[in-house]
Amino acid sequence: MNEGTIVTGDACQIAYRLDGPEHAPILLLSNSLGTTLQMWDPQMEAFTRNYRVLRYDSRGHGKSDAPAGSYSLDRLGRDVIELIDALGFGLVDFCGLSLGGMTGQWLGVHAPQRIGRLVLANTSAYMGPPAGWDARIDLVREKGMAPLADASVARWFTDDFAASGAAASVVAMLMETNPTGYIGCCAAIRDMDMRRTSTLIGLPTLVIGGSLDPSTPLSHSEDLVRAIADSKLGVLAAAHLSSFELPQAFNAMVLGFLHEHFEERNPLHAITS
Image 1 (cartoon, rainbow, N blue to C red):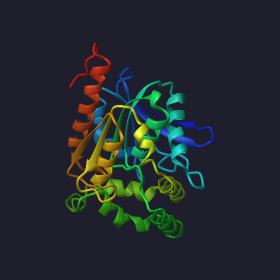
Image 2 (cartoon, rainbow, N blue to C red):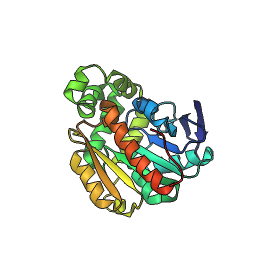
Image 3 (tube, rainbow, N blue to C red):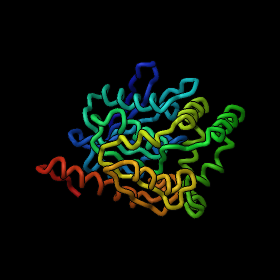
Image 4 (tube, rainbow, N blue to C red):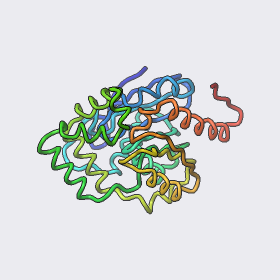
C-alpha cells in the first residue's frame, strides 16, 4: 500500500492510494459525489488480485483540497490526467461511479490515449435541470451536510439494504465531506451536458446501471450505451451505489469485462482468476 498526494497545476492537492502488485496493470477508480476513495473498499480484495489499483479522493472530497468556487468537469478530468502523469503511469483502465463516471466520460472524449478500457457505473451524460442543483447548493451553503443524509440514503440504497445498517460507513463519508467541496462538485454536475459529446467515446466501454436506481435511472445507462459505439450494458438489481450494495456482482461484472479486453489486447498474457 502506498498513500500520497500530488499538486495540480492550479495548486490543488489530490490525495491518492495505491494497492496491489507493483507490476500489474493499473486500474484507476473514481468516487461518487459525497464519498471518498474508501467507497471502493468492497472491491479491493477482488481487484488487487490482478491489478494495481489507484484510488483517489476527487477534488473537494476526503483528504483532497476543497477550493472555493464552482468546479467544472473539465477540471475534474484534468485532475486525473495530472495524477497519472505525476505517478508516471501511461495507459490505465478506468472505473468511475456517478460523478466518477462523468469524469470517465470526459476522459473518454478528451484523453482516450490514456485510457485502455472504460467502466461507467450508475452515471449519466446529463443530470438536469440546473435549478435542482442550485437548490441543493443553496441548502448545503446554508445548513451544511446534515440535511442531505436521509435523502441521500434513500437514493443510494434500496430500503432493505439501508435498514440493515450496512450503509453507515458511506453516510459517514457524506457527513464528513467538506461543504465547499461538495458545492463545487454539484456545480460541475449542474453545468455538465455530454449527451452529444459522449458519442465521441471510442474506447471499449462497460456501462453498469441499477434497475432500482432513482438518481441515475436505468434509462440513463441505456442512453449511454446507445451513444457509445463500442459499449455493452450490465444491469444490477441495486440502487445508486451498486458497487457497495452488491459488491460481488459488481466485481464480477467489472472484472469479466476487463479480463475479456485484456486478453484481446495482450494475447500472450494471462490473468489469474
